[in-house]
Length: 525
Image (cartoon, rainbow, N blue to C red; front, side, top):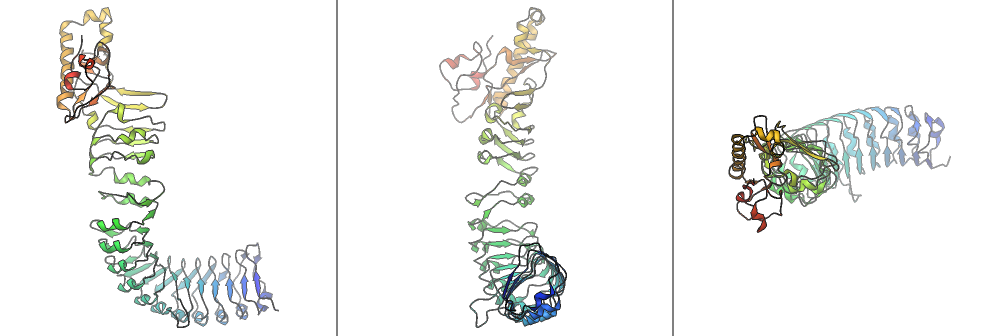
């Protein structure tokens, strides 16, 4: 028969390939892929001597590649990927010198890559990945170099997800036009050969999850065309500073390795790094300084970044713009030595769901530094300097609840109520003698002295009135309601608008607006 092309892909054909098909000796293209054909390929396939392109991928074909395939000497493309082929890759493959594309991925092939692969001098892509191939990668793979009659040679070698062991063969240096080399997820060992630096056309290099020994080779810096580099779960020593020469690099994976020392400053010269920030960044438990500004990163900030902030020894201030454009959902930085004011940007971070800043040394004005958080579920600011006003005459603030409809503060409970309540009741006034009144004045004075002279920076209450003085069951006075309070900068003037209760505000407010500890200390009768 004269039939030369038979595209059958993307149907629901089932069962074995019919025997009559093997009589189509003029067939050049056979595409029965993406069907439900099954059963092993029969020996008769060797009768299709005119075949140029054979694609049998994404089926359920079982069994080995038969030796009769050696008769398909005109074959340039063979796709057997995503099947259930098993057994070794036959030595007879050496007869198929016209091969350009060979794809054997996602099968159950086992054994070594045959040394006869060196005869496939026209090969451009080699994909035996995701199989059970083993043994060392043969030196003959480096003989897939440029043939005198060709303008190019092998571009892609994908050996990932197999069981290859031993070293990377030094002969790989001959593949000078190689753009993609995937060796990850094998059992390769020994140091990386220096010859890898001769692969100047490499764009993608994946070496992760092997057993490579020693440091990252300096020769990596010679691969100036690299865009993606994955060295994860390998190597020891430090990150070479010469990595800065990989000026086209957009993706660099180094996670779960045995690398030590500091991250070289030169890594900041890799200005093309982009994509999303990986979750694995949260595994850098000893990271002190992470700067990702002026980059091309996209996507969301990974939730694992919280691991870099909590239970460390971080010091100094939180950056004022830490809320990252108001998109934070979980903000956790507890158990450090952070100091300074609560960042102003938290006020506009309405997306906050959980906030944990306890056990630091932060301070601030809760009524001014925090905003309305409709989604807030949990907040803990305990054991900070804003709560370290643990003077006996200042009411203890336990927390607050903020919601668009309802907001309230949670204080310790004082049984006696406010001084205003006592003075407005004839019965309670009669029991509130001069000695108790003098003690209340003393208690308020002690509280103000603590706020003005023992706190740093000083705290000005701004509204000392009888409604904001609470008494316990023993008539011990406590100052409450810090809604008008402010922190004083001792090195500059502090201007505020009027705040307080009429008749109780200091007379200074009538002539000026700058707050001081003297202004706040005047308690009117």
